[in-house]
Image 1 (cartoon, rainbow, N blue to C red):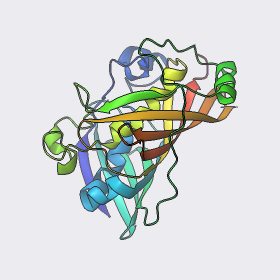
Image 2: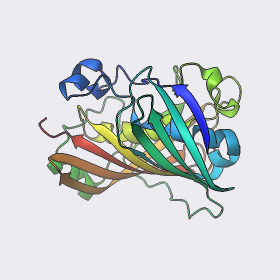
Image 3: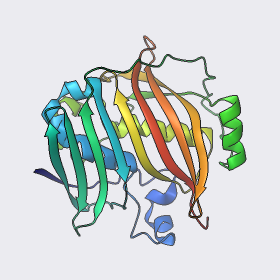
Image 4: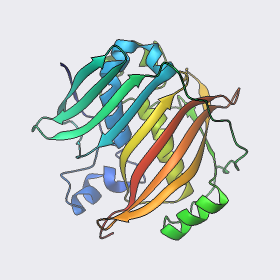
Length: 267
């Protein structure tokens, strides 16, 4: 078993989702603002991107589950257990020994058929999402969600470590330039929150399949459909499917199944 160690970075301290801020997170009993789940997921696959390189960006699979908070500037280890040459299990362990997340990561030899771009309505730049509720989610499930466009990189590309030179070479913006998992999974977070406003909410799990690497200066279209809306232990959950497409040729670059708590118990 191999171990990679790093320092956590809260990539969204100023997000509209104030669970990433110290003040609101502490109101809910956390030590401080939460490191985003998409960033933790990038940590879980980092050792395999180092190992498999562009192959993983083109056909990689990851099932990432967040089980405990990770905080800004916290030291952590990612332990990698190779099952065979194309499959691995990874576990993120905080400095205090608590497991924060785990993942199954793989190279998909035979990619499933890629989804096609639907003609969902593309949201206007000034679109104001309704407040999230079960009624709103049910309406979106029945009538369809709005699609949104995102670009890699924007003026401030998402970097999941404290120094971009610590990223695998092919993910360094000034070298390889390919989009990292924190940004790509981030698109699923952004489209979810853009269809129904949530604050605070918590990212729990993503199951993602890459279809091809996203290169520098790519514009993406994100489309979403509601899978399930449910309640458990006082929390209210949303489960969605998100597909990302290259805007130029409309080919799918990634599929994502995202599960989140959209309303915390007591909020």
